[in-house]
Image (tube, rainbow, N blue to C red; front, top):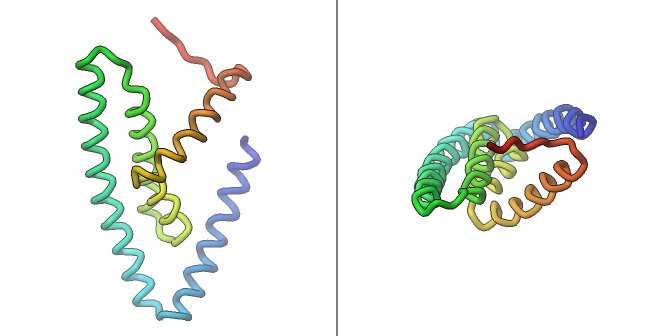
Length: 130
């Protein structure tokens, strides 16, 4: 897992820089800067809207006496998606929007759930219960 994360940390910024330079040559640097600013603004707004909806879902689940496991996973995706959208670049923006938009987030949550279950089965993740 650590190797993949290290590879991700090295490769993604290099690809981002290459894409930003190519886009700057193609449409001009000011348009690229404007795109970066606009995706940040739109991403922050979307993260806020989705975050507030998720908080409401958590509160409703808890009021019914249920564990809000799906809403908590939504919250984690929204947090990561919002943070990734604030970093400049087209690849990170695409990842951020995938994590923020409900249709794509529901698909990604299935993979995240499977990964968490696999880690728990291997004994890598421990959950403490009262």
